[in-house]
Length: 60
Image 1 (cartoon, rainbow, N blue to C red):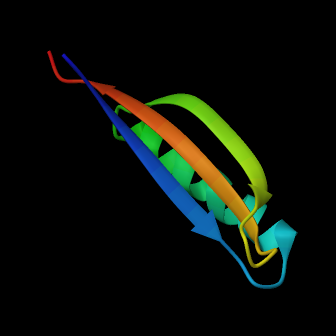
Image 2: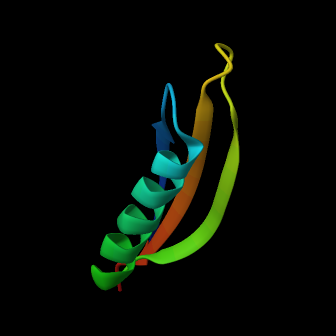
């Protein structure tokens, strides 16, 4: 059985800061056994840079 998890991160100012936070989060998640399904960057309705991260973990 697989478990999927969608995470959202955003920032008010620095896209470089957001990128670094996402990289740290992905490194920590893969170290804990998650597989990265997708990472998307965009903006939310307030024009704040946003990252959406989909992770998968095999529970079997």
